[in-house]
Length: 125
Length: 371
Image 1: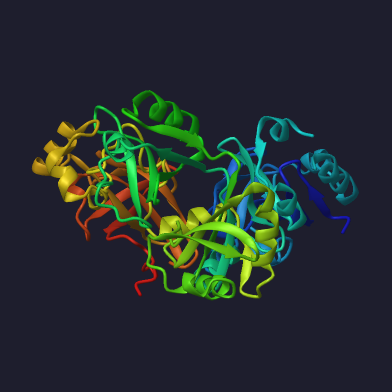
Image 2: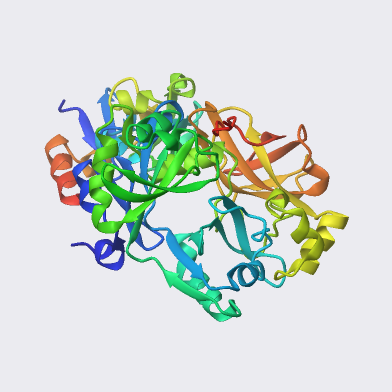
């Protein structure tokens, strides 16, 4: 799991080569509740660290997902359109949002590893 | 103790909510469960549609009006026919203002010797001040602060209460009676805010936990929070005060003409009667409608509605995902020319117009007890 990093906005990014797969954490989906709709970015979209890049909606409310890193979207999880509940049932697997070609790998150093993220979540509750 | 806890009141069931895993949020000055840890809004909603769900609605205000002039005094503030409301019957109404707007919506019950009102938590203080300032004649107002209120909603509610009070199973929709439930004196109304059969049960607050536990002991009953309460009422096409109706919306615009009985519509004699009577005769310039967005994206409160040219013709006042409807549902105001069922309009979500169809409400058929 050493190639997975976490942001303070409760996203994870799994890095394989120069491509990062991005989704929301178990903690984030618990906070959201039942996810009923997800809007993922189109392939080719340029994303900027901290910029709004996707939308995740629960029964109650809409929330934005912020890009944890700069890059270009190379794949989106189209399966979430029909099965948004995958974000609840398997947030760090089937419930991934999109993949980016990372343009500045140095930004990964600003993100947390699993132990640091765990401590961060505990400090939040 | 967090700031939220200290600034907001707790209902008698607060500790029970925590014990049940309630995720507590501030709502209208009270800490209440939005959902419960092991369930969630979807499941808590489905249980109310399929079985029976218990809601703590103790934040709502309960007041009693006594005195010989009570009926006339209340009729001066609401457009409901209170005079012809039989003893033991309950009626939905609203306090209107001089411009025909709605100050709050409420339930009125005709008791033997008094009128009992149930009012919204957020409007409670203003309503009580309004009543105290404007109730005329030989009338006394008593705020029933020692009472709690539980709502048991869903098709199995009658069977649950029937264990203790067989006659509760055949009492008419929108009627109110006293029963002893699980050894506790209760005032029981066959009413609710979910579109399902069900009851609203008032009891002394020091017995509320015992009653809630007795109800929850039944296999069919589980606790539901504010989240499910909102999705249930939205699917049922029921207005939420402060969102779908407020001081700027009239009962005619809101489609609540049915709640103004003929004698009152004709005779007037309530605040804003002239405005409302004029709208009844000539029509209103906008109407509250049901909206079914195409696709799966929910359209939320505040979303602008436009015609095909992009002109703004209205706004969504409540919107979200309907768990039973299986998709997004919304209600909002539209210019009257666009308010007929079958009309297509656009909802502008995150800058993108999304097609919505005007539909008749409710989104999910009501399942009230009809004897």
